[in-house]
Length: 172
Image (cartoon, rainbow, N blue to C red; front, top):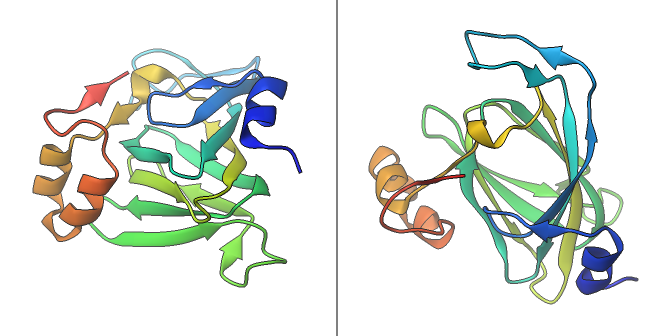
């Protein structure tokens, strides 16, 4: 099996602001115009390869579109999703044929805060993400510990572990 370093080189993955590595692999030629959601037109759909190494994590963030994560290779990962009412879901993305609680695809609805960790710290998770309407960094918001923990104090301990900046939110 290839290593995380092999995959980063093979697919020319770059650092992502939320943690991990990524490369956009598809963007639609079509656009969506939805002035109630976005100030500008958005690509209809985009997709990326995404890789998290064992001790790395995808920090809590949210986007203005639905996102589908799907599993390719390596360790399963846990996605932590906080909906707009503050309910936390812990979902396992991985090989369903090898892990009874894992599923191959997980949908994260728009405007939900979410983060991810690799379940086997001695491995990596290589996955794909599809966003519709397409991903644009204008719609990406990294959480700050202070703001998200204030909004959802019942999850403060988890939020502290899975945010990158403890002073203020960072927008990319």
